[in-house]
Length: 439
Image 1 (cartoon, rainbow, N blue to C red):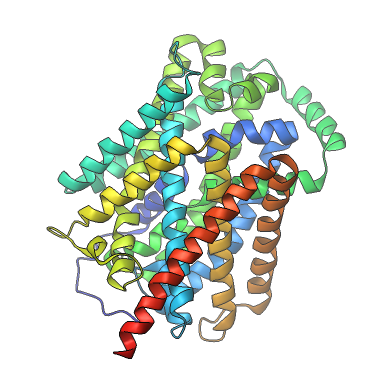
Image 2 (image 1 turned 120 degrees about the vertical axis):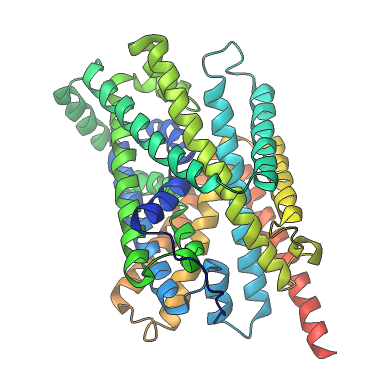
């Protein structure tokens, strides 16, 4: 286990919940809304709740492992400590986590740009959208390198402001929508007849990326007060609040915006719908909420993932130059993380980025559940809940792959090839580390 430096334990429960919500409520809900409605219509809120239950199962192992290992390296460190003799496993989990963050960073930036230009004539211009996404990553890359001090308070302000703005918008849409509660229930019943539990589970699995970020709480292990109580409280509270906010947002969209418009404008559906009902004021409010949501998520992801990349590089599973820090800032890792995200934005579409993110975090969460099962007596974990976590996350991963196979097998092939390349990279670095041990 890690040796901890003495630090000021300044983070209480409200700050930890803000960290988790800041990571979770980024671009996910805005991106998954249109895809979900296209598949299951008015059953979208139900699928969001199921997705939250899957996320809670995933969180169980993170909480138990976090309290046992007490290491800010979170996912990577947990796996490394649980399987200390397998360099390849540690390298693979490190590579998968980092590239999962790369894809979520691309997703947040893509969503930022979609909403930022949603009320302009360039809303459907893919290359202008990608250009703005690249620019916003560049902006927050520079902020992370040159203006780290004080960003914590700015981050908290952005997180809680975006929650208030998004909730107000959704409630206003529900109250001013063209659909009343009775009609909504009738439409939901019709969708239930036309859809299956299988479809709902597929959407719940696809939306898992909307809950990615709760593990960021564990990265603050050395700065938090009373981790034994605050880690589980912060993570489970944040997931509950995320589910609540996601359901309110989806209801606001479904009450106020025709389903065909949500599907047509899926990358900025909420802004388009608010504009039709509330005019420019509604559109601008949604854009402000989306920009705040994605901005805080982009900033937090660059900050946390770059430091994790530096830690992994220090263990020789990435090039050593990525571990170099200047004034405690891993500038090489920050630039590399941003560059990889920009490449993904250029070559990938929205759904490819979304589904790679969901698959990656489902896979990583599954590996955490398996690791927790291995040492369940040490972590004082329930065997039943841990097994349910493994089953639920396995089913989620299989369902996403099935969806890809039946809807876009070329995209699935691209994702598989990417995983193979990541595994080869991890194997290469783990082999080099084994050779270094022999000399």
